[in-house]
Length: 437
Image (tube, rainbow, N blue to C red; front, side, top):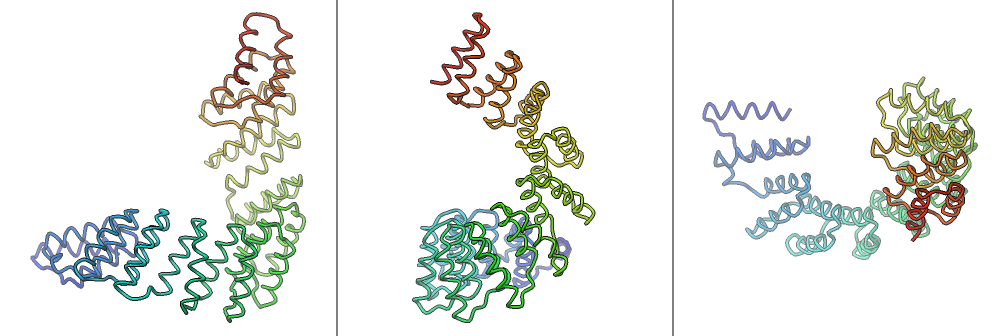
């Protein structure tokens, strides 16, 4: 209730009463905790006006540094830290950790190194939470230094906990270093740090991403054998992994087991399976899931509609795809640009290039960029129907978008345009061949 607290400050000032420094600090901390950085600066401004800021201590400075970091002004926070350090004051580790997190996010690793050296010089050794911030920041930025720092702190007799092991394993999995991640997994267990459901999910995701589905299934079963039922994230990770590698039928079986085991299926679970089924051409089950998720009280997202639209267009049901596209718009969802591409290609496949041109004009009007393959398919269909004026419009769009033509497309167009022998066509051919160069 920070705004109410601010009103109390107003009333106190009107009667000439100035709260203690401790009260100001509690108020600053309260605003910081709820993310009201605007009120942090409002309160600090009033502290300056009232003269209380003359007695500002290192704790208050810490709140201001954190507020600057939340606003993305990490360098200013660092300048403020150096000022108080110059005055002989030293904030607690949480302030240093906040700055480290901010600089890691910005990729300023030289500053991270500076802060670590300052901590060692002013406060002794950084604690495990400081190293957690450093390692987490480095690994999130795909920086190989994260693993080196992790191994270094073990050599310095620190004892990483399960959270830190999970952080490092996750970073390694994202970088594709599954072998090293697996080694740390067993090292963690040998040290008595048993993985929880989140830790399992990190490793499951790594296996699925690498296509090691056999290992992923073993790990999933190991998780359940250790007494973990598994949560929505675990099941969704497995379903997504199976679908990504052409095993949507197995994902379907796992999906059916979720309610039997008391695991909730969320929108991401449905979207993952719908996408996998559509990719394998099983539009009947995909459509069933689309209807089912709505009866479960979930609202489909653009990621729900897109694979269905793609699948319908692919299998000659373009009008049904257009109906879904309109349904998406009616729900105030913004159709991704690629849905237009799917529909244009579907219409061309059905020999309806005139309607395809309408969708292309809509894309141009809405400043959406078609993929090159879509334009090439449209050109081919229009050419076969001898609609050369529309072909020129599409070619103009291609060149304006910076696309070049494939050799096969150029050869096809030269053959088509040679059929119509006039000066204008010759100019068009020159432009086509010019874009080849």
